[in-house]
Length: 120
Image (cartoon, rainbow, N blue to C red; front, top):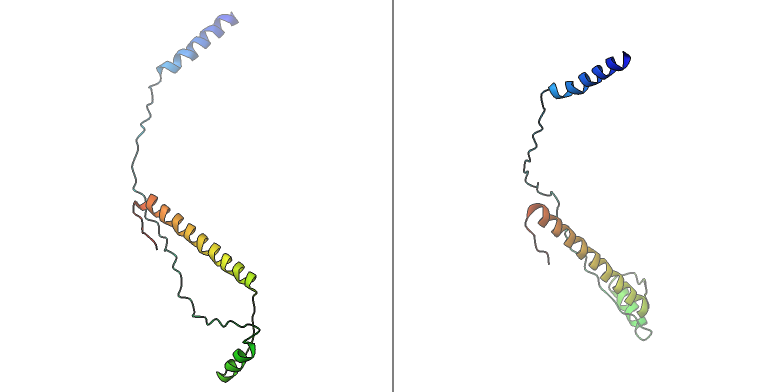
């Protein structure tokens, strides 16, 4: 008797799922235009003008006398020729990194806005 009741209950349970109305899911896409990037193009500021004075063992006294005559305090900050080459290499690396950063920003702008702004 219990078997019959359980079979009837199970069959009613399984058939009741088919009686419910079928739900449909609507899928739609909405195209949204890309927003403009609000990035400012980095600018290189105008550098201060430097006056390089080359001092050698032959002209040191003459250069210091000339600086005193101009009212300048003759202070020496020195680099060897090898250190000066390293300084030039460091500035070249900085320029290269800035160029790469500018290229990345241009590519982002091209991707998001569809236009590029050429930089020199």
